[in-house]
Every structure is written in structure tokens, then in C-alpha cells.
Image (tube, rainbow, N blue to C red; front, side, top):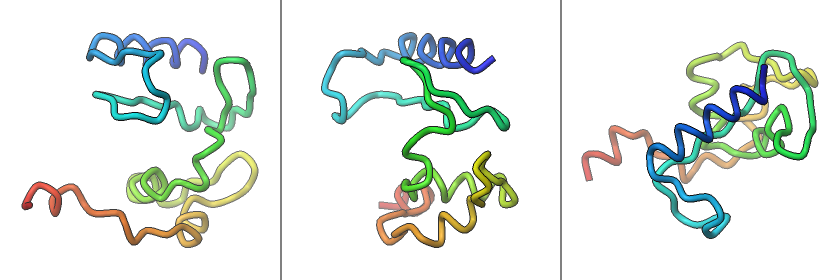
Length: 100
């Protein structure tokens, strides 16, 4: 059940020190988002599935395409196709970041 899963993600964030109510787009210790939940499509006050920003965020699409290359969104779009439309020039593999 997606809302129960979201509640658990929020509890994990809280246990790790995330303070909600702070600056919406500011830095944070942890940020867990529920991007998809199977083929569920829903919109409520607390949750929209699939995540509304999923298709425009290269930093989400790149790792998603790596772990699930054949993933299709409930609306029929393919993750690999969405990734090709994104600007990935700012993405850097974690290993490269750690070498700096």
C-alpha cells in the first residue's frame, strides 16, 4: 500500500535527522522519495504516483535505468527514452566524486 510505504519513508528520514518544515529546496541530510509503486497511479494530498518530477530528473532516471533498464511508467513511457531526452551533462558517477 503506497501511503503506508510513504509513512515508513518519512519515519526513516526523521530517524536520520531530517527536519521537515525547513527550507523546501535546501540542503538536507536525507531525502527519500516514493517514485513509483508498481502500476499504481494516484493523487492525494500527501502522495502523487508516479512522482510528478520523475520524467524530468536525470539524477533519478540514470540510476533507475541502470537497475531497471526495461522499466515502463504506467502511462506507457519508457525510462530509457525519458533519459535520452534529459540533460545528463551534470551527472557524475559516485566513484568519480569520491576520487576528488
